Structure formats: structure tokens, C-alpha cells
Image (cartoon, rainbow, N blue to C red; front, side, top):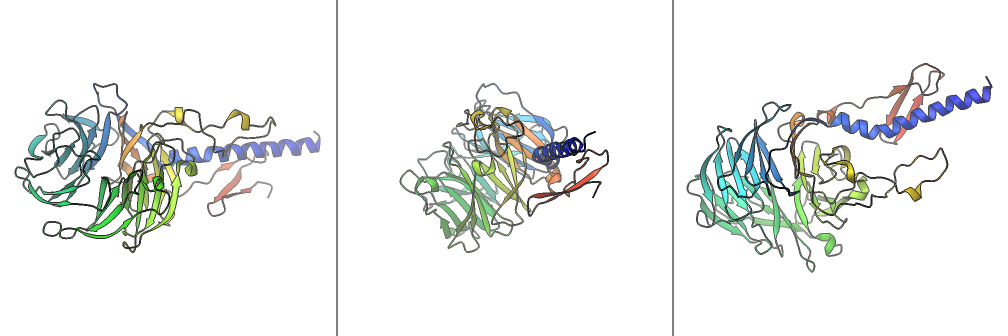
Length: 443
């Protein structure tokens, strides 16, 4: 055989193998790091896209709120490979429970359509029992709430609408007799969308208006039962007004020095922001990641959650996005899991592809024409049962249980015959340089 032809053939095989290796890397890595264990879509009497809402868990009990399905879905997740829908809590037949939280065997279900917060005994998940209701007549609370947090014996809730920016604090140590404690009147101009608490600090996500920037505020709530919270500082981006608004929700790093905030919009400008809050009086924006930066085709990030060294973000049509926080000031995406159908995957536009046979299309920022502008897909993530049992809540498809233990697994080296001589070659990837080192059998 002609020596030049042999050399060309071997090198062609080498190049093709390398391309297969590189293009399969991201998909295979994500599949290795986060894998599906199980999924349940409860029966729901609505054709609406927005069926299911927030998710929470404790021990073997998981609870999922609803939009147009109504009620709360209560799961037994003792076997993550085969979770069971144990019961459906829906005492009024048409109650929209946007929020669902479980602490121990007690559930807190927040209604978005006028029925207050139901406190429910979940000792027997097959037969939930109402303990008490928190509303305008019992606890001087809101009848319709959008978000809430449980802080010891206290419930902190917001209103389900832009008309009221007040946060209410209610003592719920006795569910039958909730006691109003105080109102918190934030400096945010319009509405507080969500609250996050770590230790004795509460972070509120302000929505803002088209004229005034939203504020993410940091409070000391050490003595919330007896004293008004102390405002330690606030985040108000110095960029254009609209770029500082629609702060949906935030979550702090384990050491409390960084805050990760999702800005929710449907105009393609939503992003994930990282703030240095080591000095809460002077927080600093240190990093920003948009869907284009991450190569995603989705409407917006939704909810960030930190557990250990990882940041988990539910990102609507893009599903779960997981970031490594080794450098907490610059999260690095290391895995993803999509709960959503494939019609919004990134593709290249035809006119950007050249007609040379060896050109390979990759890395373009072009998106499909059907760029999503609605809210659909992965709504919530709950990783606190452990990496082997991460719960995802999908607006349309209900509950997903995924195994993310691969996040901590050592990276696998890829072995193949790159030079076509019938002998095994070896490749290693340098994460620092982003380069592959190939050692062929002839070396």
C-alpha cells in the first residue's frame, strides 16, 4: 500500500476518533454525573402547561405544590427508584397550593387563591390531617401567599401579588392558634418575591419596577420574635434599571459570604448573578452568567439552591444546571439534567455551515427559531436528601428523582485506538488548559 495513503488513513481515523471523543464528552459527562432514578406525573384534571409547583422533602416524605392541578401531592420517597404518590391533599377541591414545605412530619401548604396556609400532620402520609389554618382571621396573615419560609416557630410569608410588599411574621408553635408577631416593611419599592434564610440572616428578593431598581435585602433576624429585624445592607445593581429588576430568588453559600441570585424574565435577558456579601453593607456583583454564556435555550433561570460545594439551579426548559463552587466567586457548570422535551435544544443555523466536507459544526451561539418565551420545564430542585436522591419539580411532568453522586466521582479517562494500528491508545484531559493529551501506541 502507498505509504502516504496509509499515513493519511491512519491520521484520518485518528481525527475521526478524536472528534467522536470530544463531541460525546459533554453528553456522556452529564449522563455520568446526574442520572434519572425515577419519575412520577400524577393524574391532573387540567390541560394547562402549569400543573405542578414547588417541592420540599424531609426524610422519606416529599411534598409538591400545584398551579392548575390544585392541592398538594404527598410522596413516599423511601425507595428513590420507585417513589409512591401516597396521597393528594385537597380539602377544598379547588385550592391552589403554590407553596409546599415539610419539616419533620409537619406540612405547610400555602394557598395562592385565598385559602391561607394549611398546617398539616403528615405522620401518616396516606392520610394527612389538618392541624390549623393561618389566614387573615387566624394570625392576621395573608389569605393568598406566593412564597413562605419556616424559621423555627415562625412562619414568614409574602402576598401573592404586586399590590402588597409587606412580609408577615406569625408564631405557629400552636397550629390551632397562630399568633401574629409583626409586619416587615422592606425598602424594596414594589414586591418581595422570595425569602431565603441561613443562620440568623434573611435574604429577600425584590422585584422592582420599570422606573426603580429592585432591591435584594439582607436582614439580621436573630430576635424576630421580640424585635424587628435589622437591615444590614441591600443589593441594587448600578446597571440599567431593567437589568436590576425581576430578582426572583436567591441562595447563599455555605459560609454566607456569597449570594447566588436568579433574575427571571421572558425577554432573553435573564441571568444568574453572584454577589460577594462578606460585607453585607457593601455587596459586590462579581459574576454574571446568562443562558447564552452557558449555551442554553431556555426562558430563564428560576430557583438556585446551594448544598455543600454545589449550586443547583432549576432553569425551566434547560432543566437542572449544577455548578461547582470551588471558586465561589465564579461558579463553573459541571453537570445538567433536562426534564423538558428536546424541541428547544440548541442547533446551528444552515447558512453558517460551510460546504467543506471536513468542517464540523460546534460552539455557535445560534438558537432555534422557536426560542421559548413562556415558563415551562424544571421549576424547583431539592438536593437536601443527599446527592443520591435529588428531587426535581417540573411544571408539566411532576416529580423527578435523580442521582448526582457522579458529581464527586473522579473523571474517567477515555481509551481508544486513535492511530488505527489496532493497539490501544491513551488520552487525558487537562481541565486547566482545556487540552487533550494523546499517547499513541507508537510513542
